[in-house]
Image 1 (cartoon, rainbow, N blue to C red):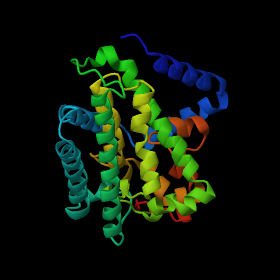
Image 2: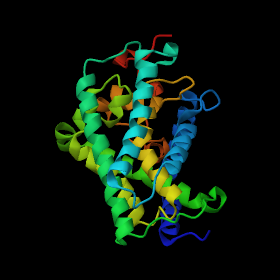
Image 3: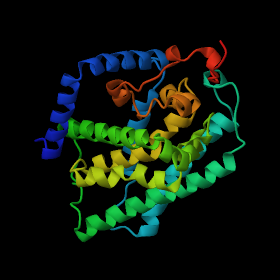
Image 4: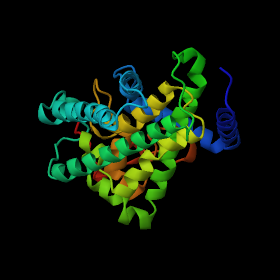
Length: 302
């Protein structure tokens, strides 16, 4: 596999930022160490394994681009309902593995509003997918290659895609924490201080449109040369919020990094990324080591 122009440019810019910002490299190192200490990968499958599994499922159930719109919509709807409904039922109804919950309580007071916003966000995700698939069929956009996928051959494109989606999320998420946009748009999402699975899509509609715009942007930048890349980008956007909002560690491996964003992010405006990468690079990472227990973080008592 020969790197595309977009991949080469992304790699060069990323390496330049990494090399020039010496202080930020140190911050990134500290952030990665803090992440490992908060979410030890040797104990849980974590987000990496979960997201990879979801990407494979989406790839295998993606359907043909020229399939009827209702069938394509049903595919996404079924995947989302099974994943979000299943995770909510497991951890909030059955309350599996309660000792691994980050907070001591379960907050369901805003559940009906969150589910309503979740449904709206799911519909916007479906609309993006349908529009892109129709554009592939009509020839308005280059359709991803449907040949057999080789991870070994396409590894650079996969890594470039993951970095881009995380950068997109970090950039627009940090922008939404500016006072004007936070008050009018992003504060809706931050109504969840003790989040659950459905909190992951509990967005203002403007935020939802921006969030899912990473998919057409990745396609336009040439970061989805194969159907697996398209499936992986769609999967990350559709399902990574599960790990960010489940509020649960243990074997499921939910993100304590994003849990802290909900419990203290409205005050400190921190932990904007889907991973520690850009928070570490730009010095916006935050852990409990930075936050005294008396500051009101609903952390489990030891």
